[in-house]
Image 1: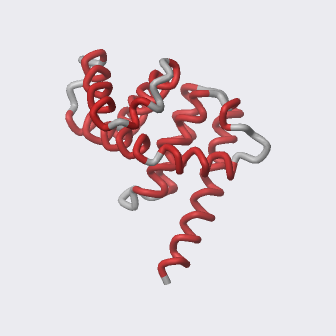
Image 2: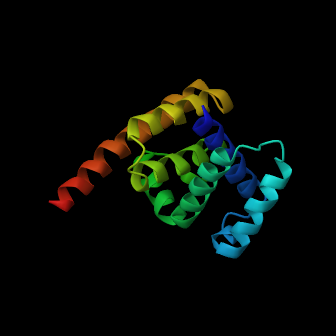
Length: 151
C-alpha cells in the first residue's frame, strides 16, 4: 500500500504540473527539484520517507523520459491523440510506462494492476480498461522487443 500511495502522489504531481503548464519547464533538473520540494511542502502530512523516496524516483524518472514515454503512448493509443486524452489517464500511463520500461525491479504485472486500481479510483471504469489495454500491449511488445534485442 505504501507504493500505491506513492504512485497516487506521483499522479497528483504530474497532474498539477500539466494543469499549470509546467510539464516542459520541469525537464530542467533544478526546476524539477524545486517543484518536488514545493509539492512535499504542500503535502506536509506525508511523513513516510519510503513513500516520498519512491514517489520522487518515479517523478524524476518519468520526467527524464517524458518525450520517449509520450511517443510510446501515441504509438499504442490507437486512434487517440495524446493531447486529447484525459489528463489523469495520460499521467497514469506516463508513470506506469516509466516503471515498465525502466524499473526492472518492479514486475510489470504489478505496475499494470496498480495503474488500473488508481484509474478506478481517480478516473472512470472505461479509463481503467483503456489503461489496462495500453499497458498490457506495451509490456508485452516492448519487453519482448528489448529481450530479443539483448540476445
